[in-house]
Amino acid sequence: QLQLMESGGGVVQPGGSLRLSCTVPGRSLIDYAIGWFRQAPGKDREGVACMSGYDGKTYYAEVAQGRFTISRDGPKSTVYLQMNNLKPEDTAVYYCAASETPTIAAFWLHQRVEYWGKGALVTVSS
Image (cartoon, rainbow, N blue to C red; front, side):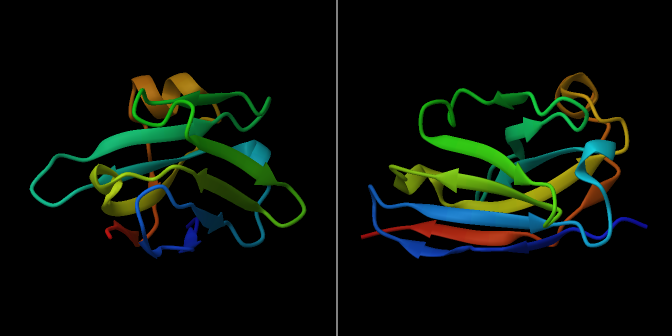
């Protein structure tokens, strides 16, 4: 069973930044596609960004393009989501997720996600 440990949520003012972390203890990141979904109150869950395991390619939802960056630190088995220029509409619970098929297509197109973190609340408010 894969464990996804999230951290980094919090409260930030509009225009501010936060970095979310997702640690996968004892596992190699190249074996999984890992990314982030979010769910705002009263709304459906939506994909934010993901990274392919074997080649590190990334994919972003339109809402994240130009403001969010997904990256990874292999030795730390950690994936990051750097969020800049945050807006009130970015307020949501952000979930780290992983697919055992380490490709963007599996994670994003086919939603083949087997593992989920518990979520990190991000609140953007003045």
